[in-house]
Length: 261
Ligand SMILES: [Zn+2]
Image 1 (spheres, rainbow, N blue to C red):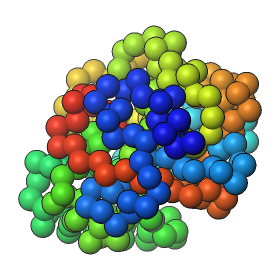
Image 2 (spheres, rainbow, N blue to C red; image 1 turned 30 degrees about the vertical axis):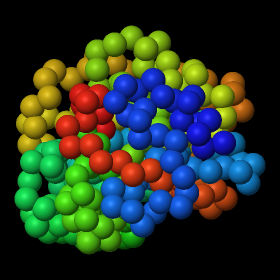
Image 3 (cartoon, rainbow, N blue to C red; image 1 turned 90 degrees about the vertical axis):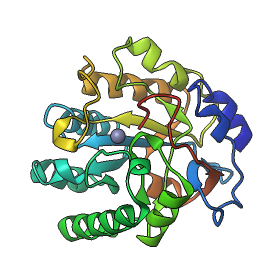
Image 4 (cartoon, protein in one colour; image 1 turned 120 degrees about the horizontal axis):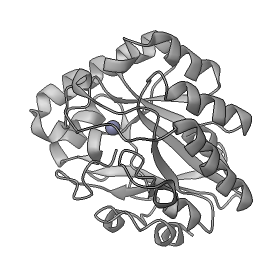
């Protein structure tokens, strides 16, 4: 089933090679969650949103999720949570899972591993203090991860979560193109990469102009496709209540798929 999930979502060039993992790889260097084995029968698709919280993004995504009674995992930036604490509180109040994307959006593979270990551990503590929840998951900006940064993140007590389907919603492409991989899904278990914000100079990076899209309308379209397929969107923690995490060794320092994640 897991390899089939990968085939359904393998359009994201440069990421495809990482997808289709086995569930027995959790201890290997570079091991990251990329999908969920839903053999128990729950038709879950894991929805993940990166780079928030952001006014005009997170609030719209939360409304769309609430309308569909769906949950998601939000990989937040502390450069955002400090500026928009009420939006982070709204994420928690909505029953969603909060995970860490980083203190900012700088590429970890450009930093010293000791620096990565300290800043990631500090960020985890800050996020747990603010939310009152334990934080388990981490997604490195751009999906960029080396053996050294993976070990640093593991030292901070976090497990990397990558993705098996990308919505390309950080690019100025059509919604049809953004939903192409969602439309190709033919079974549950994928981890879907989407965004409720767009990293900018305040997050320590310059990735060009933000894409032009209504994130609320986009998420509604995404959820409608999932519903039509009999799939239900949920957070990773919810999916793992009945499913099992599927790991893949993901070591990608340059991320040939440009700015994924
Ligand atoms: Zn990101």
